[in-house]
Amino acid sequence: MDTTASPNPALPQDAMVAPSVGIFWGVPEGGRTVLVTDRTPLAEAEVYGNCLTHPRGHHEVWEAWRKLGATMLRRRGLPAAIASHEYEAFPRGRVVYMRKPALFTLYADRHLQSPKTIAELVRLFGLAGEHHAVRSDAHYRTLT
Image (cartoon, rainbow, N blue to C red):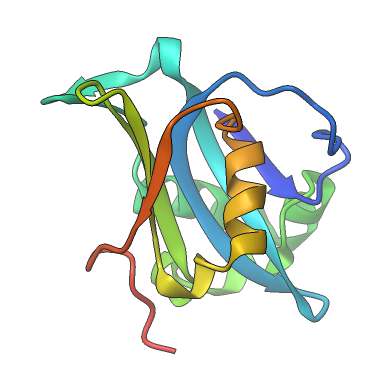
């Protein structure tokens, strides 16, 4: 499981990341939103129809993190808020790779579609030199 929170000392701003697929959330911490990801390098992604995708789902990953508790989450560089909230409480999304037309698609809650947040997601998933698009999807909508 390749998990990151951004900003994250384990993933410096200039770190090179292989193009990846995965899931992400925007979790509040200290008056700001921290992007939290769980990703898989494209070379290890699962086939799903015409797409390559991350093998784990939002619920599965979130529950594994919640079981760690706030102290262990903080030690791993993850926001403590994860321990006390359901996975649907915060804006989230998924990155998939569509083999035809060779395009990474970032499905993201509209709350995460600011240019700054998209640029950070592109960095975290190693998509800077890759064709990518941002889309909304009914699966990734928070009510707040």
